Image (tube, rainbow, N blue to C red; front, top):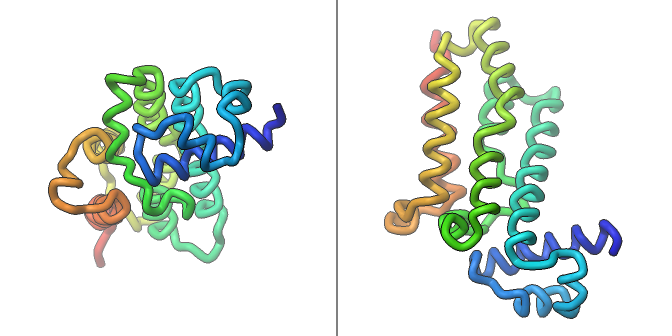
Length: 189
């Protein structure tokens, strides 16, 4: 099967996830795509494998969006930092990421990949913070603490139920987190 079909299935998976959460069925996905389950199973042997690849697909999309921000000459350093910390590609707006806690018990490989992806890829962000410190735009902060605070909060957003209990969307919580984190390190004149 072509990589176009694989991408189509992953996009369809995100759509049914958006509608039904992680509890979507392969029948739901087949209906979304107008494709047989048998065809889906030729690409993804089971739902666990599909979810594992969905995690990578989503994080790769985030990484592409971050790269676009980093290469945007019209953004200030602080705007770039806010953008890469709070990036949520357009396709993921409205997705309830807080349901991902279900992965831990039912799909441990996908959960492990989610954690691994949350904890990696910080090089560009930390380099941007270093650049901001050198330019006097950002105070000299402990980058390990900054990274751990951001990771821990995102993990709590994703794995806890606090957002839903407080009727907060993931997007709104992420925006607030980024404001709190970046405003706390910006040098004020």
